[in-house]
Image (tube, rainbow, N blue to C red):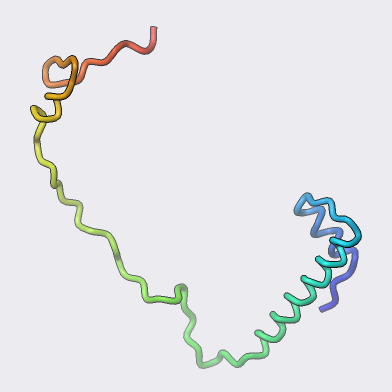
Length: 95
């Protein structure tokens, strides 16, 4: 596929880029190389290759939701400067 100057201008406008003439020439060459590589990739016979979503097998990595820190309210409140009825007392922040 041949990349034209209009294509580069259009893509630059979509990306909200202002390119100089030199940058447009480099972008044109780069895009042509990318398209050429994709054409090469499309020539490969993949009929016997099974489609995949990940390169490595994925399995559930989540652990069971188990409570590990129990009811330790007294220990937690031991560091509170002010407490009342098993709760922290904090300064009022909204009038």
